[in-house]
Length: 145
Ligand SMILES: [Zn+2]
Image 1 (cartoon, rainbow, N blue to C red):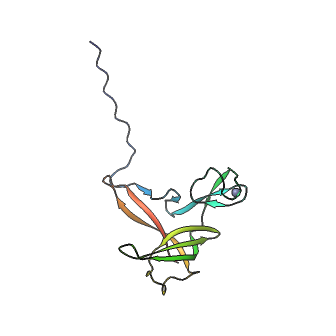
Image 2 (cartoon, protein in one colour; image 1 turned 30 degrees about the vertical axis):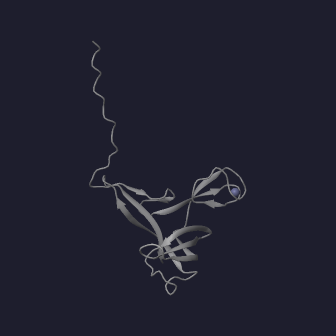
Image 3 (cartoon, rainbow, N blue to C red; image 1 turned 45 degrees about the horizontal axis):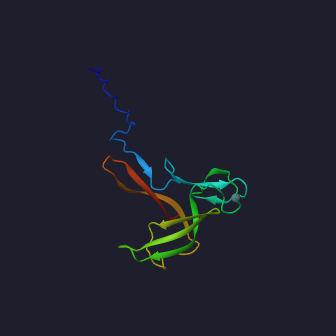
């Protein structure tokens, strides 16, 4: 009779106590912390920036990138008021010191009287909800600065 295999050790769980629920960013270019920020991949050849990781630069086809921190403030360069959802919201492009970020505008009335081209906005994160284990998903948008 074969000797009994030793009891399998449970894989060590990450130290995530229920008192300190873990937070995960909803998109991987959002970096959480004391001061959350957005991170871009910058082409080391031409300086073009992309929020998602690419194998090659869409501008010059170079393949080397460095991670850069995007400024947390910007100006609205285009927007659309989206009426199809239960609650209307503002979808916008924000120019953060040369890096274009597509986002939702937060804390504004979704109408043309309150949303203006060139309005100054700043990065804002918010909770999108928790799963059963208490891990919280964090989303971002831009709110009037
Ligand atoms: Zn490039």
